[in-house]
Image 1 (tube, one colour):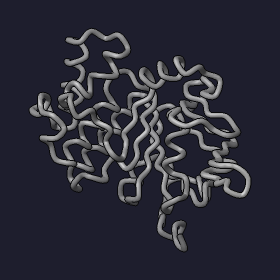
Image 2 (spheres, rainbow, N blue to C red; image 1 turned 90 degrees about the vertical axis):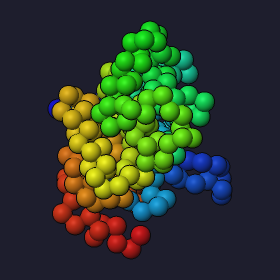
Image 3 (cartoon, rainbow, N blue to C red; image 1 turned 180 degrees about the vertical axis):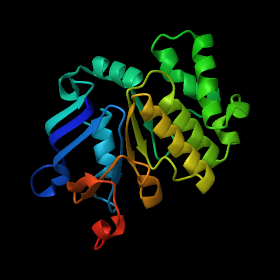
Length: 238
């Protein structure tokens, strides 16, 4: 299996001296093409930091982060922004939708920023919204949608276009169980097409959809042995 994402011996340190905080330390995680990997761990274990480093939203203090073979630390800000627009889809925990744009406009925005014609971008956006059962809300503003609907718009934005890597921070957190299952099926379908996905979740049921589960504690990998039979045992004592 070829690798879409690699973090190799990655450290992320905030602050200096006695005030230094190691958000992650010696972190090595690989995600193969077509693979769905779930990340679990207690609060403060480094899960969100891992996603931010993988998506180029944060820079590693040491180590390497590679997406499709490109070492993010070696890219200029312009090159990094281009890679994120074209190759990486990100589902933020707080959605990060633009309030003044409709659902379709929010989803189409990364395509348009990358030069896709507005009409084509809207067509792809509406198709992505249809995959999360929101095509009928394409012209609605975020303020006129529920939290769960906004979450699904964020997911549609992450999967639209030709993304090779999807990073999702609790993508089912604001959803009911039925819609959450629908989102997991959508992620699995994207992986079946060759997309790699890294998902932070606290839900063992949703983690069971993954090909592999990585457990973090105190900024380091505690376990990366496969799908969990008893995930709670690895989180005990957190």
